[in-house]
Amino acid sequence: MNSKGNISGLLSMCRKAGKLIMGMDMVKGSCHDGTAKGVYVATDLSSKSLKEVMYACNKCSAKLYSAGMDMQTISDSIGKRTGILAICDSGFNKKAASQCEEIEIDTGLFYND
Image (spheres, rainbow, N blue to C red):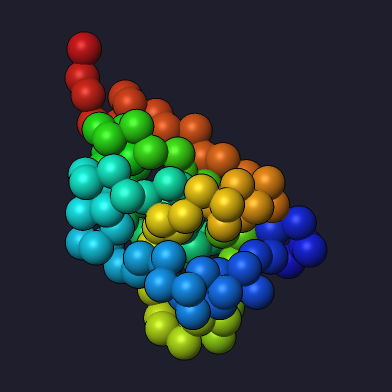
């Protein structure tokens, strides 16, 4: 785990500020209503869940990032085991996005020509 990809302290501050959404259904909802400024996923998220969150982000034009941490590390940071997070504050998201790698959304996974 490199320091650039470790945003655990920032996620903890987001949660305390009430600007962190956790879990698939809640994150998809925040994408649809436009409150999600960025979506972050754990490195050990299942491929099925990653495909589902990619679809939601693509549909709602939300940026998707790798958090650079596995679910256990995220759990240790924020106190809840989850692999999918959304940051709902522009400032927090800008800082987190600068420390994380953006995931390119492959629309071929869910749209056939």
